[in-house]
Image 1 (spheres, rainbow, N blue to C red):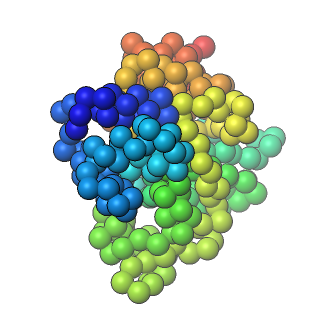
Image 2 (cartoon, rainbow, N blue to C red; image 1 turned 180 degrees about the vertical axis):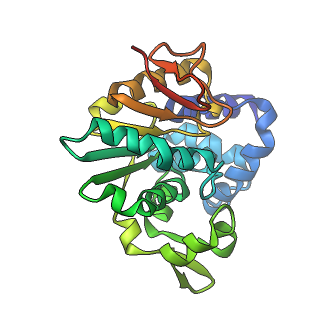
Length: 272
């Protein structure tokens, strides 16, 4: 890719999604954007970026961001956050919300929906323990394509084989063709919304939130962008709330809005 085209691509990805790309990611750029170039009738990714730079076409720009944002995910990813949610996080939040009996969970950067559906199954499995409580799950992503797939709730055999316990599959999914579709009872627990983590969530009608799952996305951002995202998340998290990050992510040395919880891995609370 020519330098002007790469520099332009780097700029729009950073400004619009916080994603940082380097020349070493050339193979990723080619594999992700080549289908867009072909659909546009252009013979190379370089020409596709050049046309986008020249026309500033919003549809093309959105397609680029959509294609380049990483969407790797699976059900019950890493397992431990969902165990902690069931065993301690929800009970502790319930103790703090006895009056409203309302709990709000945010799955940020939800990709194709495996995380919010895993959260919904975890909540549903608590059964009588949550009787009389309203648990709301808000799932957001920057990608319209991923949100459409998540809302549709259809997953291939390969997708449900990644992390999904057999009993959960039988209980919460219906066979559909060669794959499986989420049952309406589970889908109705989740509100899917388009949202860019670079925005200020306090102005997006997202809060207040009791538990935030923002996992395995910040590793693709630079430190300044992570700090910006943490500042936004802190604005909507309730004083007793929890922030759950991915195993390779931390607030340490980046944000003073959150504190490390003693003895916890990947879980953080608001700074006091």
